[in-house]
Image (cartoon, rainbow, N blue to C red; front, side, top):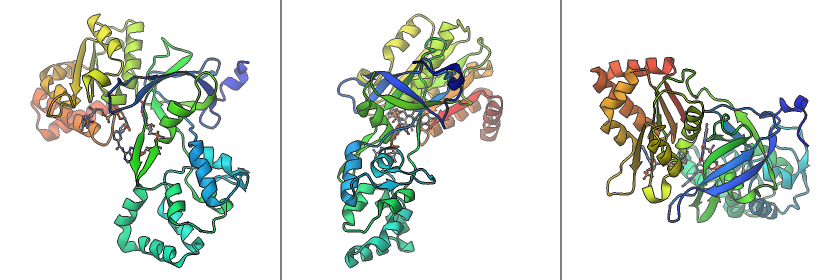
Amino acid sequence: MDPTPATQALYNKDNPFPALIRENRLLSGSGSAKETRHFVVDIKGSGLAYKCGDSLGIFPQNPPELVEEVIRLLGATGEEPVSPPRSDEVLPLCEALLSRVSLATPTKKTLQFLLPRLENPHSREQLEKLLMPEFAERLQDYLSQREIIDLLEEFPGARIDPKELVPELRKLVPRLYSIASSPVCHPDEVHLTIAVVRYQTNNRQRLGVCSTFVADRVQPHQQTVPVFVASAHFGLPEDPERDIIMVGPGTGVAPFRAFLQERIATGATGRNWLFFGDQHHATDYLYGEEFDAWHRDGKLHRLDLAWSRDQEHKIYVQNRMLEHASEIWKWLDGGAIFYVCGDAKRMAKDVDAALHDIIAQGAGLDAAGAADYVKQMKKDRRYQRDVY
Ligand SMILES: Cc1cc2nc3c(=O)[nH]c(=O)nc-3n(C[C@H](O)[C@H](O)[C@H](O)COP(=O)(O)OP(=O)(O)OC[C@H]3O[C@@H](n4cnc5c(N)ncnc54)[C@H](O)[C@@H]3O)c2cc1C
Ligand SMILES: NC(=O)c1ccc[n+]([C@@H]2O[C@H](COP(=O)([O-])OP(=O)(O)OC[C@H]3O[C@@H](n4cnc5c(N)ncnc54)[C@H](OP(=O)(O)O)[C@@H]3O)[C@@H](O)[C@H]2O)c1
């Protein structure tokens, strides 16, 4: 039964909507080093409204096999009553480990919790050493390679009461995903573009909690996932005549697929320019057919692609931007909005530097002048970033 209107408004982060996943499709081609997937989340009847640029929050669950292994190493049954961190709620250990605490991020505090509970003097000595202030760097390196399960294995025989352990762990928090659909075209659906996180540390296969939850563990059409809409100060201009420049390599392209869907559906007359990049043209051109078709039809006015691993030297989106510096400057000078989405650590910084260079060159400004220009763009909401 659909929720009643009175309950509809209540769906938010504190009361997420149980949504079905309607589609889970691989976007990366065979032979790609990546596993990027397209998801369709059904929000019909939820009363959830979204706009282009918003994100969808998902509350994930840890892998059940990992939960079982942790319970076994604790010598517990899973039925022990425990309280999640910063909560008075009481629930069985297995439920808390599945959906309330992070099993992936031990901290110094976790080790300090473990220390007095170690019965083996050798283990205690080892851990005491690791916790010495002079080994802070080594401790960080150690923790970055480990999850809770590694600690339980490396320090066996500790007397750990689950009731004491669980409140000491970090809360399992929801993950956000940029929405890749326009509500004008898909009012009852939210599309997502998710890079599935899998990697090895300390000789163990690790699974990104939320990306593998939706990719591997949620049965489409059968099982619901708790979701909410996180609205953002990132979005299309009210003025449909305004030109927009979008830089979104990898999964950073998600909101720009939404922007383009909406601008095309509403007949916005401003021009659209997309910079997309990833490793290989043959396997990593996410939504390539859609972008190529819009480009061919003149709806996506400019499309520049950067394949980082199709040749010896790296070609990134900012290299393409610099190749078209004077044209970008003309668009900016005419009032275009500049958007960036995707990797915060490397890409967004380099794109920012390229933007400064383009402005300095185009406007004939020195570095300080270009920085002022960019500052003003930000104030005017003509430079918007959604980076993570
Ligand atoms: C506003 C916003 C929008 C976002 N939009 C998107 C989107 O559209 N698509 C998308 O895919 N993601 C997006 N993200 C990122 C997303 O929220 C998650 O962070 C991402 O999916 C990873 O979550 P996870 O639970 O699968 O992995 P987690 O369990 O959180 O694990 C990720 C962590 O694993 C570690 N890690 C990852 N790879 C390695 C490695 N190779 N070696 C060692 N350690 C590693 C890192 O510490 C990393 O932080 C967005 C984030 C924000 C804040
Ligand atoms: N924690 C990690 O180790 C790690 C690693 C990768 C991605 N991520 C995160 O995973 C998410 C999804 O990643 P994704 O696969 O969608 O995209 P991505 O890893 O950001 O890659 C997309 C494209 O950007 C290129 N790139 C790398 N460095 C760049 C730079 N400095 N400037 C411009 N482009 C650059 C990549 O090239 P190359 O890969 O050929 O360099 C690739 O062609 C993002 O949040 C990202 O931050 C995390």
